[in-house]
Amino acid sequence: MSHIITFLDRSVKIITLSDLECDYLNAQECCSKLNMGVLPKLIGHTFVVFLLLIHGQFILTLMNIPMSIWLFYEYFSIPSGNMGVYDPTEIHNRSKLKKYTRDCMIHLGYCIIFFFIYLYCMIVTLLKGDPINRNDDIIDL
Image 1: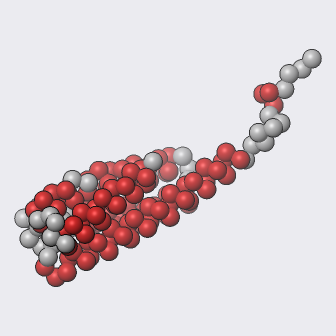
Image 2: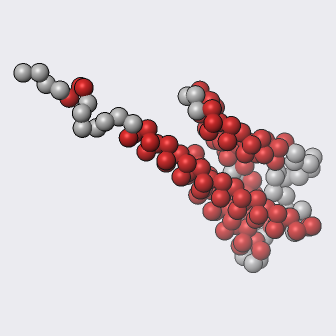
Image 3: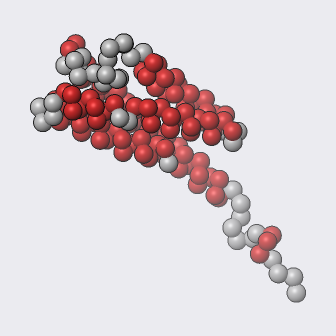
């Protein structure tokens, strides 16, 4: 569920960054919209990793930890004086806009891949039992 929400959030962020690139939004408005979703994304992804760890899904946990580490690095490496991860004074400098767009696309691809991995795992789990010959449905006469 978290990856679906993150997928939708990433789509909105890519549209917002493209609006900034086309000058439909100013930098202050764009960065305030983008910074609203940084902390919920970090908390949601960390929660997913925690749930996977609790339920014993160690392979999926190990596959999700690198993105969690990247999100923590991105959040805690904000220079002092900046508004957030996305800063309006730096977004046009040194092609940061291209970097932010690239990072959003990478995270969007990550979410799409993991959505299908989780879907596959759910289908495999549902099909493990035999739905026709269940022991609880047998009536002795």
